[in-house]
Amino acid sequence: MRLHRLILSRLNLRPVRLGEIVRRLSGLVRSVKGATRDRKTQPSFWAIAHSAFLAVVISSGLVAHWAVPIYAQDVPNVLKMGTSADYKPFEFHDTSSGQDTIVGFDVDIAKRIAQDLGSPLEIVDMDFNGLIPALQSKRVDFVMAGMTPTPERRKNVDFSQIYYESKNTIIAKQDKNLTTVESLKGKTIGSQLGSTQEEFVKKIPGINSVNRNKVGELIQEIKSNRIDAAVVEDTIVKGYIGVYPDLAFTVVESTEEQGSAIAFLKGSTLVDPFNKVLATMRKDGSLERYAKKWFEDQGKPAGIGFQQIAASIPYILGGIWVTLAFTLVSAVLGFLWAIVLALCKISTIKPLRWLANAYTSIFRGTPLILQIALVYFATPQLIGYDIPAFQAGVIAFALNSGAYVSETLRAGIMAVDKGQQEAAMSLGVPYRLMMGDIILPQALKNILPALANEGINLLKDSALVSTIGAADLLRRANIVGAEKYLYFEPLIIAGVVYYVLIMLLTAGTSLLERRLQRSA
Image (tube, rainbow, N blue to C red; front, side):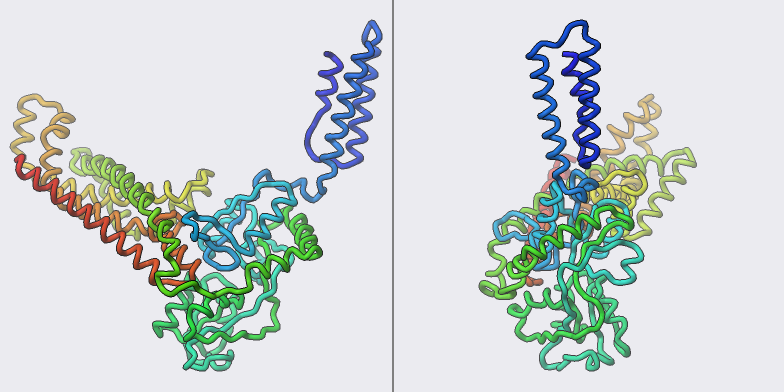
């Protein structure tokens, strides 16, 4: 058993080079020899055979580890890929089966790279303009989102070699005849926020430059005549050709380097292994096969209007439960927090009143969407906790709702006849029991309509969590719109669902109010 333990003590299952394998085996042999010399008796045949067998197994394992490419040794156990899955066919949500799966050209390449490097792949979806901040805060290991390695971006992150070359394309209504860069002079031109096309548009002299978060939004701006044209990547344009025949698409020639590359944290050790896998994929034809798979036969819709999204309607409706859960949890936590704030506001302790009023002033005086963004993006940097989008939304909404409801609740408490409070105090009723059993029930009855209105606002405002990636009703509608190259149809479905939910909430509140009036 001593030999067995000694051999196992030499085992270290991390990837090693051949020279280190030789050194370990040499040390193992010397240790075995020393152990046998220390024994009073010679080892038995079975002990020697057992030790030899273990040595062969261990050496085989070490050689197997050494056989793994040396460039894969610094790869994390799980590769986290950051992307913006609204950029079909590079990356987008496939909801045709009722399930949500992120697929696309970039996703296939990332899966192949992860497979060759021996690590599972985890995809993190977010808005495009948040990808580099997520990389810098180490929420993801690399970014693939059709991103071009511009000089400005190279100052902040490292890039792999370009794995797909692309060109800029002008989109405009056919009757406007905007087909060259020169023809755009004096026009309003749009581009996607944070993209290389945005930088390209800014360099065009004599135009009014605007930007939007998504390519689909640019298309709708063109159709509504708010902008004259937009510049987007040629590969993305292919998907819109069959859907919008009234638009013209013209490729713009450029002398600058254009194409898609993988972004990494500055100084990342992943650049070299990723480049080697990309080189292998280029040699074996994998990149060309993926390009043919995703870039050919784009923009040929099956049916028109709602027919195109019929298969994805169950996926959109699945967001109802996320929206209701978010609203319910936020409302309950916000109401409990509002009670604390209201009691502080009517307290005789001045510091408590000052803090409660200052808190209310801050949360009522700043936009809710700003509060959501701060909770979601600042929490990982302040305390190191990678907070999920749902939790971040609940916290932000509960804190915000508590500020508003506390004022309503304070007004309801102040509306209760002061004689009841004085009577309870004269009878020796403790303050906690007086507020819980006498004052608050009457205050809640008085402010029920205001609370119902706050609940309705909370349900509608819950759509804001879609900005941080929570898969609520509106987020799912936008995902389907990006997948099908449509805009209004998915939003109309989401709007109808929101209206039905709010009507049900209103009816339930009215019923409760009538029952309370009868019990008075």
